Image 1: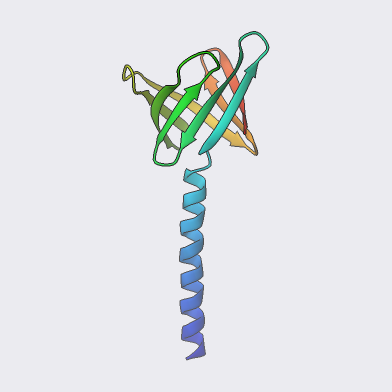
Image 2: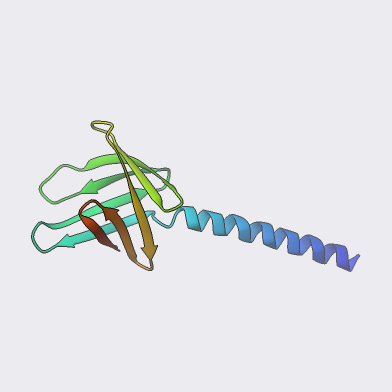
Length: 110
């Protein structure tokens, strides 16, 4: 009887670990990220749970979008014109890197 309880406990723990690992991985981008450019100043990307977000820059209205990730691809679809951008992204600690046509853009988690 003890061995059945142990097996059940291990299965439950593995199931819980799998759920937590999946949730954390898919939400790693959720949060506020700031990019600072010496010429153009700074702007912030905010990725909210549920796949919505916005870009904020001082002096400009927020640019709202929906987002989704698939592997290392981030797709953002802008609410105002429906334009869709897909970029390669990576997260290393508190640094989000977006690969753009102009080269990599680095953002710091806020």
